[in-house]
Image 1: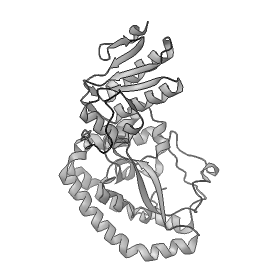
Image 2 (image 1 turned 120 degrees about the vertical axis):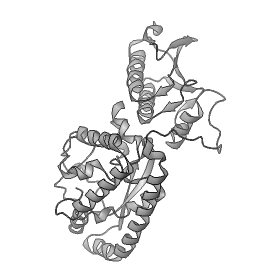
Image 3 (image 1 turned 90 degrees about the horizontal axis):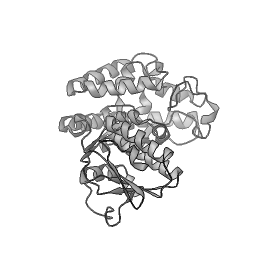
Image 4 (image 1 turned 180 degrees about the horizontal axis):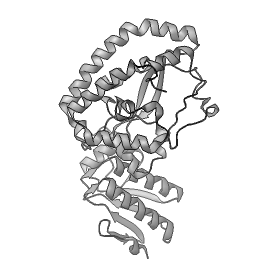
Length: 328
């Protein structure tokens, strides 16, 4: 019986023998973990059905964990050839889906799909830092100063990169920001031009979904200096000015890392990624386990204040001038 998977927080009923699951008022990490468990059991242990409808009429708030749970379910439904339908999506939830471009991927109940060109609903504030005008002002001021420094150093850095190895001056890569929104992150190139294609030649020293190696032969001679001094990260001030990143935040993951996240790990996307953060001042070159990154990112969210951001920025400046403190 399909109804045996119904729980008080997620009531379930049948429409034409297909399940309709109503979501609670909030879909945060606790609800998202339960949601993933019951939907997995519903699909894996029940008779086959063609449609699964999620009733979001009561859901007014969703965070990164909730987004992650929906993405996990969508993948499972596609794998099992079940059509997932979102019904009666509230403006705040729709805003989060539109911000992450997931409104282009999910199927909405007939007649309720977002209209092209319609005004984008406001996405929910998942953490106080996200909507802080003072933090944003600090980011803009810091980015303008950082871009001024970048402008002064650009010519010598660009010449050194071009003389050391063939290829572009800048390296760009898709990263995931607040709530999983994708953006292009920029750095001065510190590796050979075909580094992405040669990634399989390097052994990953990290336990978990992200990649890191302290003995990466793809790094150029100039690149080693740029990384050691963190000069390769100067172009990220543009990402901060644009608003995709903050001066201080969590480590910005790549999409393939996020693809491997379990639902609780999505919590690290509740704040904007930063040029620096707990992971950097706590010995980023020594991190060997992804769970340590998660722990540090969540510690930052718990400790966050404007004063704490300033403390982390000052610690970062001290580390940058210490030998061996640059990114790996």
